[in-house]
Amino acid sequence: MTRHVKILVTGPFGAGKSRLVRTISEIDVVSTERRLTRSGGDGKDHTTVAMDYGRITLGDTVVHLTGTPGQERFDFMWDILSAETDALLLVVDSTAPESFDGARDLLARFAALGVPYMVAANKQDLPGAASLRAVQQAVAPGAEGAVLPCVGTRAASIRQLLARLVEEV
Image 1 (cartoon, rainbow, N blue to C red):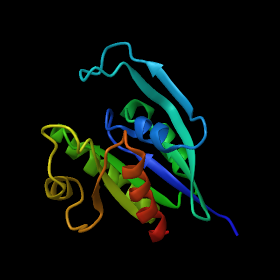
Image 2 (cartoon, one colour):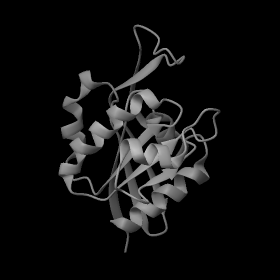
Image 3 (spheres, rainbow, N blue to C red):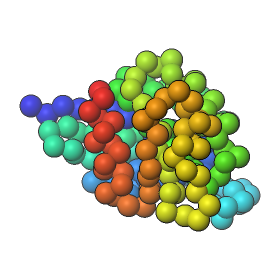
């Protein structure tokens, strides 16, 4: 029997949420990206304004990935998208320690869902990436084992992380 799991993919602006969903999805991603009026500073020129949706099958489990916008001005979408979520994947840009406080705040906000979660320490392949321990201490203190390495442009990296999260559901 096929099982369906909905994972909310969230994180600060520029963490790599949309890229992660696009990399792993086995269907064409439903995306609501729009051009930024000003560059995001890191060369980013598009942003998600409502959601990203992708899907992947892991064994007998169909995983529905719903990505949230990273900008707080679109935070009204967070509650809408989090309805009936089975698990949370918080994506953090390991090369941007200035975003760790915002990621910790998001984790606290979504903790009210009462669902299993993982923190994807994304961009671990880039120079200057913070260690998993540093990300864990800054974003999810006391949550040993909840922070895993991730390279959002490599399907194998994402698949491993999602498989572990699905086991928690």
